[in-house]
Length: 154
Image (cartoon, rainbow, N blue to C red; front, side, top):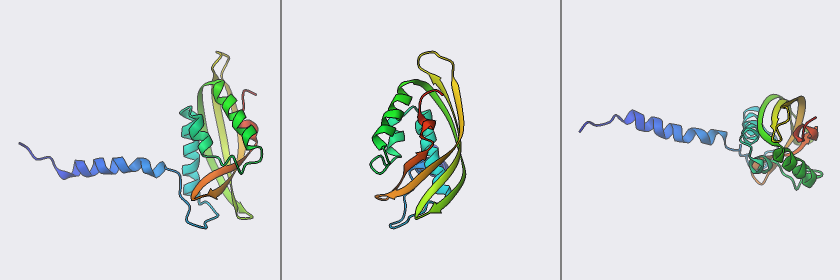
C-alpha cells in the first residue's frame, strides 16, 4: 500500500478554511469604524446574497431595527426578490469615510435583473452609500441611499 504525502491533506485543510475568510467581519469590542478589507468582505456577502437569490441572507446583513423605516425597506426587498428570476450584481467599494463614529461605504453599484414574468431584463447603475455599524459584535448595514436601488424595475 502506497503512503499518500501529507501535502495534499494540508491543502485540503487550507481549502476548508478559505470560505471562512468571506464570513462577516467581526469588529473588536468598542470598534466603531470598519476598515476597507472588512468593508469589501461585507459587500461581497451582499453581492453573494443578491446573486444567490437569498432574501434572508441579504436582510441578515441589515440592522432593520435601527434602520429608519426598516420594515418598509424589508417589504421593498421582499417585493424585489419576488419579481426577480435572476439577479447579477457588481458592488465596487469606491471608498470609506467615518462621520460621527459611523462608517459610510461609497459603492459603485450595478445590478441587472431578469424579471420573473418574462419581461425584458433591466439594469441599474448608481453610486450607493451604505452606513455601517457594529451591532452586537457584527458589522451590519443600517442605512442605504438611495433605497430605490433595491426596488423593482425603473
